[in-house]
Each structure stands twice: as C-alpha cells, then as structure tokens.
Length: 191
Image (cartoon, rainbow, N blue to C red):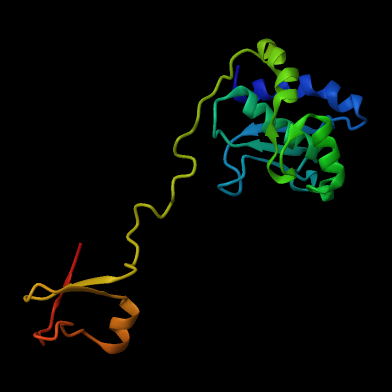
C-alpha cells in the first residue's frame, strides 16, 4: 500500500462523518503526499480551478509518520474540499472542522481527545502508515551558499579586535585601530 492509497482509504472512512453533517466530500478529490507551497504549511487543498480535470487536490507534507496526526491534517483539508474554495477558514469551515472534532485555531487545527476516540479504531482498519518522515523537506536551499557577512571582524597587531558592518566599511573606508595608544591599520580577520 502506498502513502496515497492509505490516505485515500482514510478519506473514504471519513466520508460518512462528512455526510452525516450535510457536507459530503466531493467525488473529485485527490490526495497526495509531497511538498506544500510554504514551509510551515502541513497540508493544502487546492481549488478545482487549478486542476485540468476539475479535481480538488489535497497535498500533505510528510512531516511526520504519526498516523493520527496525518489523519488530522487530512480531515482539515477534507473540510476545505467539502466547502466552496472561497470559504477558506471562515465560519462555515470552523463549524465543519468542529463537527469533525478538530480543535485549535482554524488555520492550524489539531487532533484532540474526541478526534482520537473516533479515529483510533479506524487506524486499526487502515493498518500502519506506509511512509516515513522526509527529513530534508524543508532544507534551506540557501544553506550551502555563502551569505554576505553581517559584520566584519578586524584585528590589530596591538591585540585589539573590533567589528564593523560591510556597509560602514564601504562608506568610510578601511578602519584605523580603535585603541587610543595605537593608530595602525588593522587587518580583516577572515573566518
């Protein structure tokens, strides 16, 4: 079983809950695991307008392998899928999310005790989650690129060290030693 098929099976288990509160999940909903558009976003439900075949597309970030937390993100996104896209996190969304037993802020719902009671037996039906955390998902793309220094370190033969910003060095030129007893031209210490 793939991660996607596991999540689709969970979607199918959630369908009766949504139906019971009058907000059925549309048939045209796909679920996938992958990157989200922002680092801090755990899941997204895209409008049917962005899909060539008019499906709502749910993306869940592989930030955890804890099944209950993943189901919590899935149910949050299914709440979006069951409502018009324009609703966002407004009152109809909040009402539906609370009916699905999600807790917390509408933009960052969490799994609570009631949600756990409902979904723990369902997790036995689903079986173990067939995926793992993707450790490098949020790796900073600029991490290995040199960054301009926020300050430059200068050291003088007299033992004095001091710092200046590159902007200040560009404006006033090479610094002189800051020691009263010395008037030498210190050298930049490159780290």
